[in-house]
Length: 111
Image 1 (cartoon, rainbow, N blue to C red):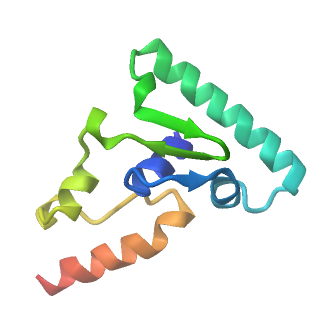
Image 2: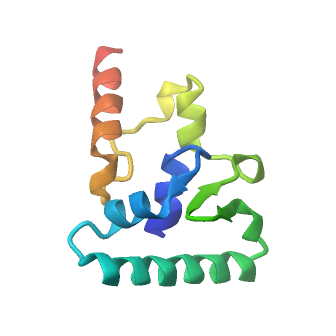
C-alpha cells in the first residue's frame, strides 16, 4: 500500500529503487532493505494483477512509476487546481509526505 502511495505521490515520474527503499525503509540496513523492496514490489504487482490493474505500475531497470493514464485520483485533481479537495490531511501515515502536507495546509489556510 505504501509503495503504491509513494509512486502516486511522485505523479508518474520514474523513481529509482534506491529512493523508494530509502523513503519506505529508511531505518533498515541497506542489503536487507533492498531485498525487502523487491518483495514489496512483487507483492504489489501480484495484488494488482489479481484485480486486473497490473498496468498501473511500470518498471524499468532500477526504477518504477505509476502510469496516471490508467487511473484518476483526488491528489492529481488537487494539483490541477481543485484545492477544495484538501480536507486537512494528505497521506498522514507516511513521513515522506510531510512537506507536501505542509504546503497543502499553508494553501488551505490562505483561502
